[in-house]
Image (tube, rainbow, N blue to C red; front, side, top):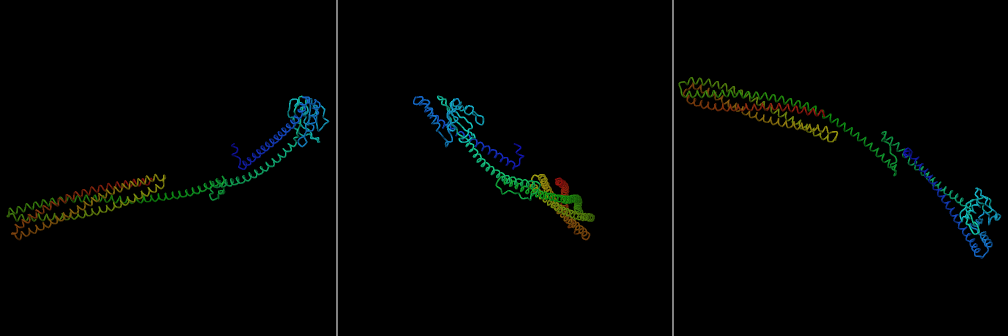
Length: 562
C-alpha cells in the first residue's frame, strides 16, 4: 500500500468515493436480486399451495371412486369439472391436467389442446414443457418453469408451475403463475434503488468535492507557507489556526515552529551580543593586565631599588657602628690612662707639673676624639634617619602592592562571576580566574611578610636612632668633660693650691668618662647588631621583591594565555 503515499489527498478522497459507489452498487444489486429471488420464492410457494388445493379436491373424488361411491369415469369427470372451475390471482391463473404420456387432459383456457399429445410442444426457449410436466408428475411433484402466453395474449411470458402427480389416474395436475409482474416489480425496485443510490452518490460526490476543496487547498496553502518559512521568511501569516480539525492543529504547530524560529533568531542575536560583550571584557581585561604588568614592573623596580639602597645604608650603618666601637675603645683606653695619671699625681706631687702637661695633652687628644665621635654620631644619625625614611617609603610601596593585589583579587572575583554566567563556555576562564585569585592571595601574603619585615626594620632603625642620639649625648659630655679637664689644667698653672681638688674632680671625671664610654661601646654594639638586622631585612626584601616579580610574571602569563 505504499503507492497510496504518492496519491494526493483529493485523489484519495475520490478513490473513497469510487469505492463507495462500487459498494453501493453491489449492495443495491444484491438487495434487488435477493428481493427478486424472495418474490419468486413467494410465487412458487403460492403456486404449490394452490396446486395442493386442487390435488386435494381430485383425491377426494379418487377416494370416492375407490370406495365405489362413484365410478371412475364419473369421479374423473367431476374432478375435472372442479379443477376447470378453479382460478386464483384475480382469475388470471388456472389449473391444467396432463397425463403421464404428455396428453392434455384439461386446459381451461385453450380447450382445443385437450386430448392432444403435447410432448413435442416447446416454449420459445426450446424447453419441452409438457413432456417435463408429465415426467415431473410421474415422479411425484415438483416445479417446472417455462414460457407461456397469458390468456387472451399471444406473447409468451415466464411462468412458474407446480405439478403434483395422481398415480392412480396417471394424471399430472399443475398450475402456474406468471412472473412477468415480478420482473416489472424488480425493474421498478431497481429504478427506485438506482435513484436512491444515485442521490446518495451525488451527495457523497458533492461532500467529497467540498471536503477535498476544504482540505486540499488549506494544505497547499500551508505547504507554501512552510516552504517560505523554511526559506527564512518569518513575516508571513500562518492561516488556518482558527480551525478545530487536524489542519488547524497542523497550522498551530507551524505557528509554534515559526515562533520558535523567531525566538531562536532572537536568542542567536542575544548570544552574539553576549559574545561581543565577552570579547570586549576580554580586551578590557587584556588592557588591565598590560597596565598591571607595567605598574607592577615599576613597583617591583622601586622595591628592588629601595632594598638595594636599604642594604647599602645598612652596610654603611654597620661600618659606622664598628668605627664608633673602635673610637669608644680608644676613648676608654684614654680615660683609663687619665685615671692612672691622676693616681700618679696623687702619689707623687713632685711630678705634678709633668703630669699636668701629660694630662693636658691627653685631654686635648680625648677632646679631639670626642669631637670626631660627635661628628660621626651626627653622620650616623642622619644616615639612620635616611634609613627610616627609606623604610617608610618601602612601606608606602608595599601599601601600593597591597592595593594592586586587592584590585587583582577583585578582578579575579569578577572574572569568576562572569565565567559562572558563561556556563560551560567559561570553565577555562574560571580556572584562570581562580589561579589569578590564588596568585593575588600569594601576593597579599608576600606583601604582609614584607610589611612585617619593614616594620621590624623601622623599629630597629628607631632603636638605632635612639642609641645613636644617646651616644651623641655621652660623647658631648665627654667633650665637655675634656674641656673641663683642659680648664682645670690651665688653672693648675695659675693656682697649684687647687691641685688636690682638681685631681679629685679629674678622678671622678675619668670614672664617669669610663662609665659613659662603656655605655657608648654597648650602644655601638647594639647599633651594629641593628645594622646587621637591617642588612638581613634588606636582603629579604630584595628576595621578596624578586619572588613578587616572578609570581606576577607567572600570573600575567597565565592570564594572557587564557
